[in-house]
Image (cartoon, rainbow, N blue to C red; front, side):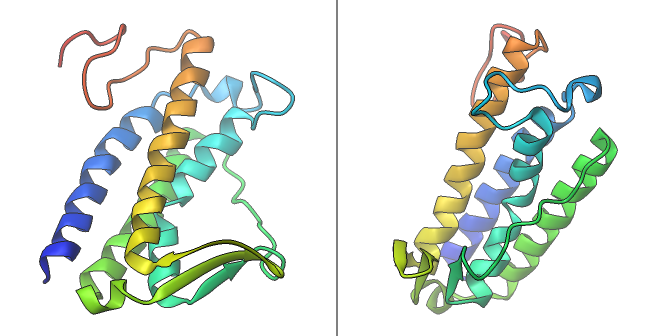
Length: 166
């Protein structure tokens, strides 16, 4: 296995540990809560976080994603057990795809579009890193949701006000 693939797998595992901590704290009685009408609900945000690792497999096995040609149909999640199962399934797909990949597989361009509108073009390797960044970005949003719901926020890369030491 190549060094870049090993690094991507290691980072995926590290981020998965933190993501699990956040997903286990979801208050099931607040799944439909949202801090603002323009915000996602708690369950929509958490479901999105749980499914993002699955994008790694998609990126490695396709040349593009066209939002106009692929209607988004989120998985309906009823409880935290299902949320974690959804996350673990997406994570397993990502790991399996990366374990089969080589550095050369990371070099071709991958396009995100909405019909004729090109949102971004990057190498597959860069897009995988963008997926990881999306997990971190949305997990931070989830941390704000948890704070607003008075749920203790777990540490990501260091202590929090709720967990001042590890």
